[in-house]
Length: 286
Ligand code: NDP
Image (cartoon, rainbow, N blue to C red; front, side, top):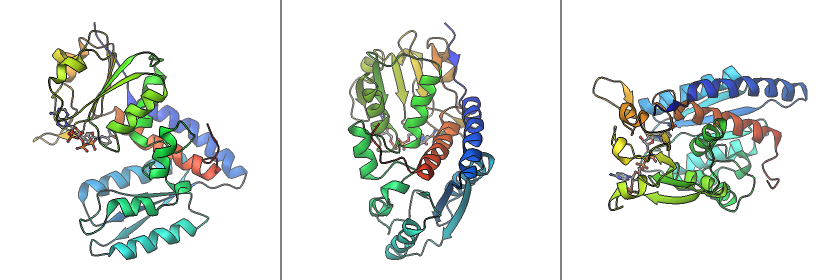
């Protein structure tokens, strides 16, 4: 079997075109969606992510601004900055690019963002709402993964979803979203013994580890839908995922590539969350 490739770049483009129309109509109603990104320090990877987010906003008609702060900023100064953004009615979404310098408590900063502006979906209130099945800002990468599965009408209900990785930003929340959609969910991580025993049972396999090509066809159940979240930079500068694309493509029914897979979807869901924040519907139950 040759897997159908889920092209995240194309899907993202399609969604962004739809969002562009939505932003035009919001602007006609006097609502101008605006995202403020806060970047502390000059980590090159963070800078590149931030540029990607700004570009995507621009393409969609969402306005954005970037607040660049020096690595030497104190935690208190950063928290004050966030307070100002919380109170600024023209700012609908606040995104603090992670990681932060070591002297700043990341969790404290995440919790300082008003949940109504938490477009990253990392605030404990957003996570709690997601866990209890309420309408909220879903964390962007898991939301993007769910959207990719749904775009191909891949059945989730009653299926066995195996998640490799349990980080707070990818593994844990993507499992929760699939559970909310009635999958039976198994989490695997670095202490899991005999990983294959679990991945070989997966109808849907989500891999979010950060280890280049660690999952080959021997980990895959024939016909599984495989989502590769990993982004690993090889010595030659190219990017690759956690899944050995060539061999897994022969066994899976669906597979996401890296690049052009989950990455573009993550940014797209950030745009979606920013529009949602601007519409102010985040507190209604879903
Ligand atoms: P973390 O490093 O936070 O988490 C990695 C997870 O993998 C941990 O839960 C860890 O287990 C688990 N793990 C490590 N080694 C093994 C192993 N040998 N077997 C099974 N599980 C293992 O990473 P993130 O979740 O933040 O990111 C994962 C990958 O996804 C990275 O490559 C990252 O770059 C990429 N990413 C891509 C995004 C996108 O938009 N495409 C967005 C975010 C991340 P334990 O908890 O026990 O340590």
